[in-house]
Length: 86
Image (cartoon, rainbow, N blue to C red; front, side):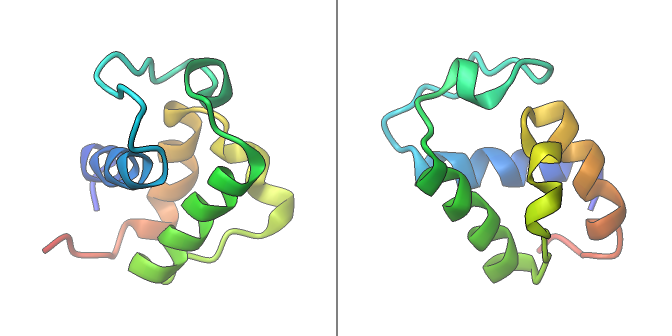
């Protein structure tokens, strides 16, 4: 997957985890928690959805890498590089 495809995938997951949030103005460099009302369960839902959809395992010690869209895409890019988006 390309960085743009990963970003779109994260937006899709966020829209399911937090359906009441407006994601249209999401700033890539800004922390998700500063922009969205996500709690720790929502965050775990994101991690589990990545695992379910793409078999991407994110160790708990790496959760900090998923703080913003930019850091999430950077972290996931090498893990998802070989995944073909259908």
